[in-house]
Image (cartoon, rainbow, N blue to C red; front, side, top):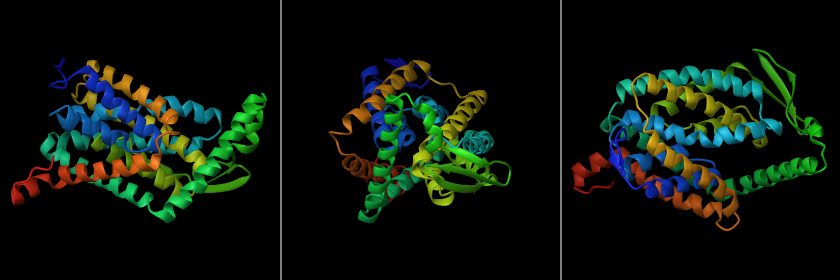
Length: 319
């Protein structure tokens, strides 16, 4: 089937199958959704127009935030003021990042090396997360997350959702300075200006490359702000929703056309994959999937970033 706006001829079945894989990976390991969408658009489907690839990547990364944000809010696992600060900064960053990319990275020759560098960064983070010491720490986090989720299910079954207020996010102090909230009986503090600045910086990078930005937001929220993992996912997805939507709108305003026919097949696949991820995770270990993905992303990152140099030096084409 020919998709005129994207400038490619590809089977709708191939679009759906790849997008199912993208949604499955993203819902299983919580990362690389935008990167895999970009790899599909560039290397599998052969899109040549960088300023169409970027917003179409981000359209696919919107699926998870749209579905997840209301659920996190209902379960009081979302630090709303921090998410708003990230989002406001994200609006500014998305406008700036999309303009810079549209202007200075208008073609594949200039865009692919930067996309490859971020791909290598994410691959490196995956290799780091597979280190034994890090995996042990992640087991404890996952156990704590499951305990909280089980408590939420217990309260829902008993019709006592109002009791979520006792264990969910509750703000004690809000303002432009120090903000204080409690979660699960523990107290957390952060400066309100910090997420605004972080949201702006992350959005500049993610909008310029056409990705979601979760690979930067999650480490920021956990390592710099010190938020508990229970609230990190909800807080980051709301910010991603705002900044990605702003970026897409600005790309369209600047003349980037989205191929809605192509996206209709891709979005269907991502939704299916996002559903299959939690269902199949009990049969396919996430660590095996992460290891496979780390190898693939390392190869792709090297190819996109250094492929031209390697080809010139050795005559070997990587990707």
